[in-house]
Image 1: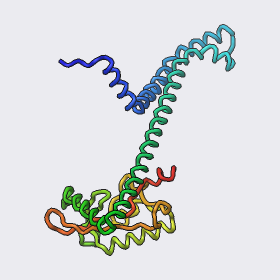
Image 2: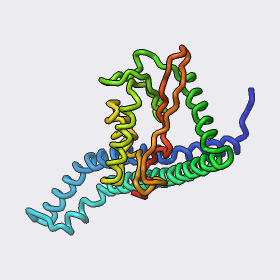
Image 3: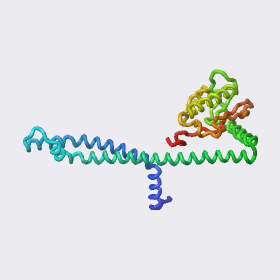
Image 4: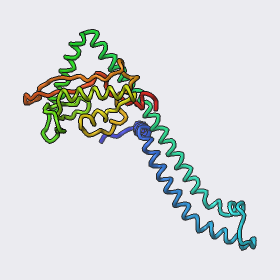
Length: 261
């Protein structure tokens, strides 16, 4: 049987704790919060007894605030410490989550910038026509690797052409005229409102919105020429049926992270 050196075991444990520290701190915070309530409840009978004894000793009907604190305050020290520990753990967990989200946002922004620079460099090197041809081949691979199933095709009223949203991997029925109307409507909105969400596009396409669709979209200041442009690729699926692939010249991005909300 293979044994793990003690120092290696401690190192692995340290890595595990560091990796999962936000969740661990949150769990501890919740546990200490419950413990503080239990401790306060169990301390109350003792505190009441001490207060009654103090009243008899001082021959008073009512004690002052200072006398009450001095007499019964010590009973609640464990509950107060547990509550303080709970607050500390939850605040620390939130700080760690915020730090990780900031790191992820930075990494996303850098990767998005690199992708844009790479695409621009490809256009510069091989030409815009060739670059679009390459993207068309990639779109074809997406269709072949993710074939349409009849029960997974969204069929809103109107449109008889099978379409594929390259961003979410969903199939739906539409047509070129409807897609161009959606593009024009989005550009009209972005000129007026400065921002359009991805879910606004899906609403125009009569598709269900997605969870991140409210935060992801296009901001007027984030577009090179201040307009949204769709890319269309006509491809054939595995069965040889025509399929129109919908892609975007400017990828949707998390606008809240981009502008630091």
